[in-house]
Image (cartoon, rainbow, N blue to C red; front, top):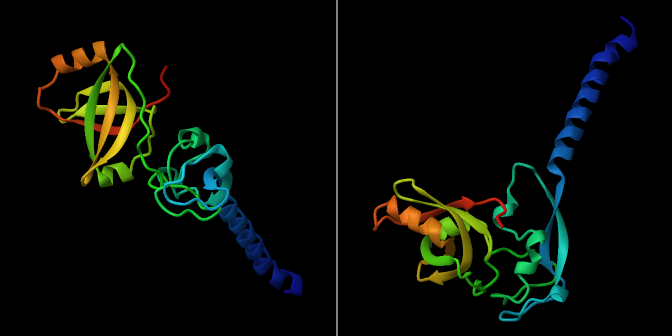
Length: 192
């Protein structure tokens, strides 16, 4: 056996290892754009478009930062809100860094309902004012077309005010027990 034949197996294994390493690294470097502070922001300071900047973060595709960090596509929902803590420059913003006092108004054709969420449920769901969410009661009866009007802290849990089409709410109430509580179970697709 000559020297080239002896080197063939280690060289082939090295090429395979390099390919697998490249494939692993390229899968882990999926950059996404999130909201960060452009300069230092003090607690209670109002956020403006000038105080926010996009930041690219690369991370493994298995990791979900979408439930914690605010995507750049939602930057307009942060303008006019107030910071709750000191935010140094280039700090990525989370949904919990912002006081949730912003509110939306219901339309004349909508009725207003309130849903409570535990802190854990709120932490595991990412929605903002004017986002559409899916709800259902304890029996599993869905109430579709719910728009978030406000999210406020109530002692240990959260109170979420929702706007619902009045006709849809009447149909829902006719199919369910009066004392059955609604739960938010996810974001809905885009609605008009």
